[in-house]
Image (cartoon, rainbow over all chains, first blue to last red; front, side, top):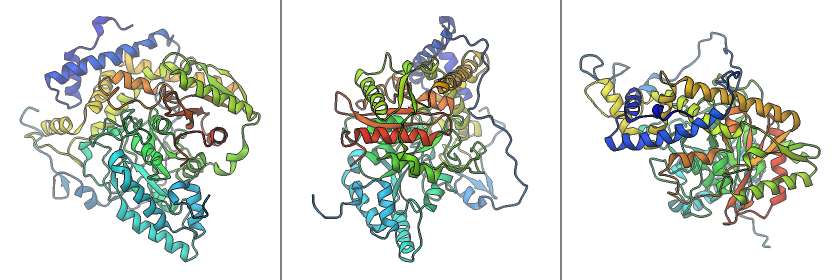
Amino acid sequence: MVPMAERITPSDVAHVADLARLELSPEELELFTGQLADVLDHAADVEALDLSEVVPTAHPLPLVNVLRDDVVRPSLDRRAVLDAAPAVEDHRFQVPPVLGEPG
Amino acid sequence: MSDAVPPSTSLPAVEIAAAVRRGERSAVEVLEEHLAVIHEREHEIHAFNLLMDDHARVAAAHVDRQVAAGHDPGPLAGVPVALKDNLCTSGVPTTCSSRILEGWCPPYDATVVARLRMAGAILIGKTNLDEFAMGSSTEHSAFGPTRNPHDPARVPGGSSGGSAAAVAAGFAPLALGSDTGGSIRQPASLCGVVGVKPTYGRVSRYGLVAFASSLDQIGPLAPTVADAAAALEVIAGHDPLDSTSVPEPAPELLARLGEGVEGLRVGVVAELMGEGIAPDVRRRVEAAADALAEAGAKVDDATVPAATYGLSAYYLIAPAEASSNLARYDGVRYGLRVDAPTTAAMNTATRTAGFGAEVKRRIMLGTYALSAGYYDAYYGKAQKVRTLIIRDFAAAYESFDLLLSPVSPTTAFPLGAKAADPLTMYLSDVCTIPSNLAGDPSVSVPFGTGDDGLAIGVQVLAPALAEATMLRAAAVLEDAVAGNHPGGRR
């Protein structure tokens, strides 16, 4: 079992939300902390397994690089792609200032 | 019995295609008959986010012209197909049932969509799902829940609940869904239809909006095993646009469906028949084992010791991959943007407004599992459990050709019953998750009803790339139960 001291706290959840670019209300923070703790407590059932000699698996297939000939071929139409963007300027995606003010 | 021609809405997909190819039915008439059923009941079921009736009428008229000109429109000629709304359709909105993609029109077709069009299928609409395919009830949709056609007070399952409900309600004789932890098989079970999760890599994921890339797989939902097999033959096969696509041609499935199970060794997974599985569900799996034995299979108990730990591993691995995949929704290139003075503030405002609660929960869970200090304890351990599950399946397949288990621990539950308690909802997926972690194929086949009269599916599991053998067993089960289950055959 994960010791209670390591149980996910509201400040952990606030930190994770910040990393994930999500803003939580105080009510959401409390609700999500309890729900995430329940899921993580359940996940502690794997402590019953001996995993010391087990290698991790990231993917069901033995992935290898897929190579192809370097042939020029049509790609997505630039205008069609930019048409889907919320804001564009001179054939580029437009965003608010990145530097200067704190995020 | 009347000699009148039955409406196409009572026919399986393969019979519709055969009749259209022979010129005995018109694709336009088939489409209009299905649209009539949709207009009758869709307001109650809400299977669709979007109906593509205008596109569909043009495509159906084209199929009829091909037939009239002596050309073969393809193996799914004139078959109306419903598409889960996380499959990209060129110029047609694809929302993933999320506010963050509302109104977005992809500039390209998913490979499966292109292959369906090439095969003469008629795409009739985009079906509802749990937002970004995260859920087991289709209640986590930004556009409202889908209801189970057999009892509208109950959920259809999820996340491909709209696709399963569309097939069960007779809106379409074929639908595509995606399955990351059971999202095709569980709604198929709850709606009384057939649902196939193919081997990982069997079907191209190009144009499937990513949830958890090492687990996601597209597959068919259909009234019959033959319909699902026909669809899989069309959508499977190598695709250079997906680097995880298995470099094999589409398997031959339909022609082998009748080969039976004589001599096949079938194991009932003991770990998935215990606590937490409703007694009536267990009884249907036992009955399915008996039916396979009667058809000549050698049935015995099998053991996959790590199987039940799959749930814990999955609910760390899938959110971890999701937290990375969903980082792309930042208000820059497509979808929703909520304006703010800086880019970072715009990213946060957009994601906060655009994602629903379940998606936020999973993104945070995944971010936490991957974060410094917790990676080894959670994500690393989950990846090791994944290895154990793969090993345990490999060991089981030394003694067995196929495995058998429940799909869902219960029949369809009432709307709202689990919506407030994520962990309880996650437990719905305990029997379906192991196949995704292993990358192996599995199918949910309707096999009678529970004590409440609602549909129960049983799961046939197979080793990688053994879809043909798996579907032979599914066909035997379908024959054994014919005329005795509520959904599927209409």
